[in-house]
Image (tube, rainbow over all chains, first blue to last red):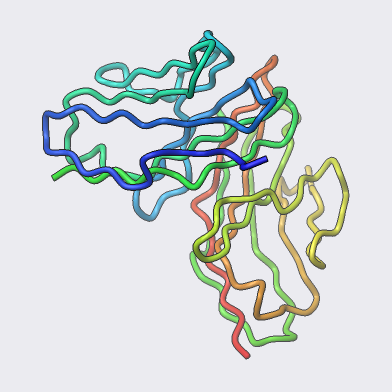
Length: 113
Length: 111
């Protein structure tokens, strides 16, 4: 099992562009969590998804951010019209069920110039 | 709302010295507490969770509900313990096990 995969590992975007971050969960895992880590901060929960459903998006900014986890393919975190404050490391975690261990991906480091 | 506090950013000790990484939490219900570790150039991984009551790599942590603490301890630090450590809490609200993390602490073990 290759573990949780995230790509790209590094992403540079200019202000106003769109950023798409991908997360492929571990095989057999249908629960995906996205977290964001700003410099000098801990990871902060953004959104929790199961296949084709958003379960909890209470940590997502109301505008410009969206997430999906389609029936086929990876989970996508999409940030429209990026601003400098979006620069951060974005981590994805997956688990086979809600109460089991979350396995983390290596993260995507987004830099907005 | 839940909150996790790790009051120190850095702890530097010599090899063989005892280690205690502090973690305090705030939550009105019955949370589950975790310690995660991130070694250099590796991904975040679970070190231990309080319900399993295991000792991993010589580390232990006891949940103290009276003091709302979950400090991580090891009697004799090793150089390979040098890493970033995060304390985390899950409220397990319904079927949602989102994690609330502290800011983390860097442990440096000198030879």
